[in-house]
Image 1 (cartoon, rainbow, N blue to C red):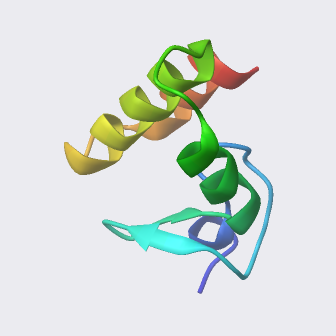
Image 2 (tube, rainbow, N blue to C red; image 1 turned 180 degrees about the vertical axis):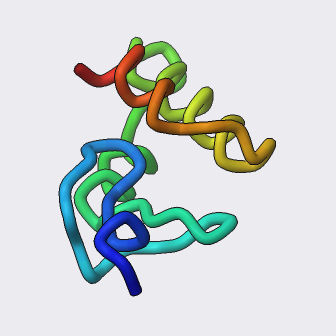
Length: 69
């Protein structure tokens, strides 16, 4: 796998562990945060939008820049 394939779509860091959704990596740390985020927390909307971006096959680099940096 290439470095980009091992880069978490949410935090942008390189990882070998986590889950893959449509070929994109969600690292174990972000996965834990995602499943433990309450729906009324601001991060929930970011995670939800990120999943939509992956699912719809949209470019996620711009999503990362807009929401996490």
